[in-house]
Length: 322
Ligand SMILES: [Zn+2]
Image (cartoon, rainbow, N blue to C red; front, side, top):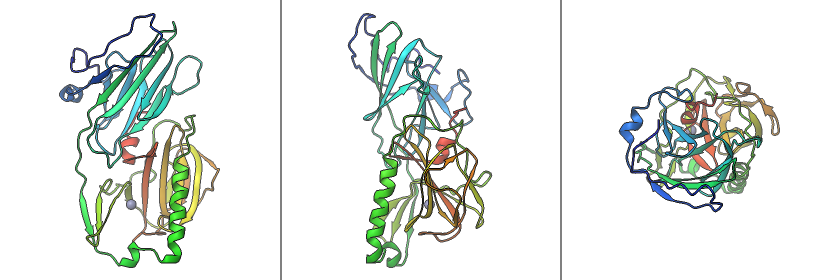
C-alpha cells in the first residue's frame, strides 16, 4: 500500500544531476488506519501481515506489527532501474538488489524485544542507472507493547551456578555473542522460515518478563514449544551450523546462520544431529527434543537474532520470503 497523499511524510527529491547525498528527515506519524486497510498488491502477503510503502522510495516494508520483538521484511519493489539501493538500519548498511550485484532484493530487520517505543530510523540511498543518487531518512513510529510478567520462586542454587561453573557460564556467554557477531553478506536461506516443530502450538511466552525470587529479572527472548522427548526438531531455514555444543545454561544447543545477520537458536536438546560447520537444508532434522541445561521438562526453546536484535521467531515465520 502506498501512503500517497499522506503529507505527514515529507520528502524532497534532489535535482537529477545532484551527485551528493542529502538526507531529509521525514516523520510518519499517522496512517495506521490506512495500513490496516491494506489490499493485496505487489508480492503476496501472508495473512496477519501488513505492508507499508515508503512514499517515493523503492522499498516496501512487510511486518506483523511495528512493535518491540517483531521482525520486518524490507523488500525492493517493482524492480526499479537502480544501480543499487542501500538500506541503513541503525549503523548497519544493506545493499538491496541492483543490476548485476548479486545481492538479494531484501533485508530482514528487527525491533528488539526490550526496545522502548522510540521510532525506528531507516535510511535509504538510491543510486540510479543514470548515476543520480538520492537519499532519504524515515522515522517509523514503534507502537508500545506490554509483555506479560511472571514471578517465579526457585532454589537460589538454580539462579547462581556453583563458583566452579561460573567461569564456564561466562565463557559460553562470550562464545554465543561471538557467534551472533558473525555477518555473512550472502543470503543462505530458501524461502519462508518454518516452525521447527510443525503443528505444535508455542507457549505465548515470548518477551515474558520473569522475576525470580523477587530480585532477579530477565526477559524471555524466545518461545517455548512443548514436545515429547526425542521429537525431531527441524532447521527453520537453510543455512550453516555455527554452534552445536552442550552449554551449561541452554544444554545441547544449535545455532544456524542464515546469512545477512539472521540466526536461529534452538536448545535443551537430548541429542544433536548436526555439528559446527554443517550446511543444513530447510526442514532437515538438526536435533531431538530434550531437557538439558536449565530446563524443567522436555521442550524446545527457540529464539531468533537479527543483527543482535531479539525478535519473536513467529514474527519471522509469517514473512513472505518465497
Ligand atoms: Zn524458553
